[in-house]
Length: 357
Image (cartoon, rainbow, N blue to C red):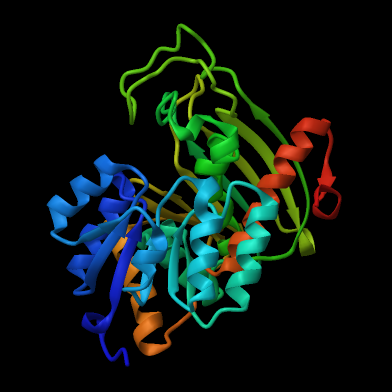
């Protein structure tokens, strides 16, 4: 029986940078790191040396030893590892996006619904302190009726690594939209209360990654050049939800404009603007009490480790049957929006999600 975090035997599937990032925080939470799995010998060797744990080239062997697993593989492989874990009733924290395609995401969601294992998807930005403050004020009614979110996740030059799996559609399922847009869409829907999405209109562009003369200052991985780059490096979209709630979306790995991670949540009584990475938060309102006036309020808060807080919520769910966060159902809704934007871009028109399905 699991009574506290130290009773949890957890494993990592996918031992690259993000897998190690999760492993560090897992250990900090007092959870037992039971082992890791990766198909790459080098990754297994590095992980075993760093954490002094058993490593495997077959996830079934790892699953024989764990209560919970954090899956951080490339998108295409989420389905196999997640479904096999759910079939064993293992608790799963699955990095975003849910999958590389809508059909794959639907199969994961079906398996999660049939499992006794808890499921959580890696929308870590929900745990940013600025986001928590805004969500709390929305829940208290301080913003009034929240009807629109402007969601921006734009890099000026930030393609993760040309030639890596990120830039190959068959493995990633897309580019900037599925990599960065998944965070922006989830956060916007979360702030709106996850209304039903009715239709989307969007354009996904590939304008920089395929250039021989792509100019940049740094890159997450070595630049292998434009060969095989077949994904979008930016996307613009408008998302219409039930009750006339709307989202305007701008995401980019690369574009000729200043970088921005600004989100603006507009309500009938007030609005909130925050920078997702910097944590800056301001509130805007107007009043006719006394002379008419406009109010701009700056809110100062600490920057926090969102991945660590995300893990804390996951382990609390396991130990205490705690609050459900970042559900598979919500992640599937995000996947449908992403699929709809790609479909709209290809068809050159607005699409309903039913049409996109």
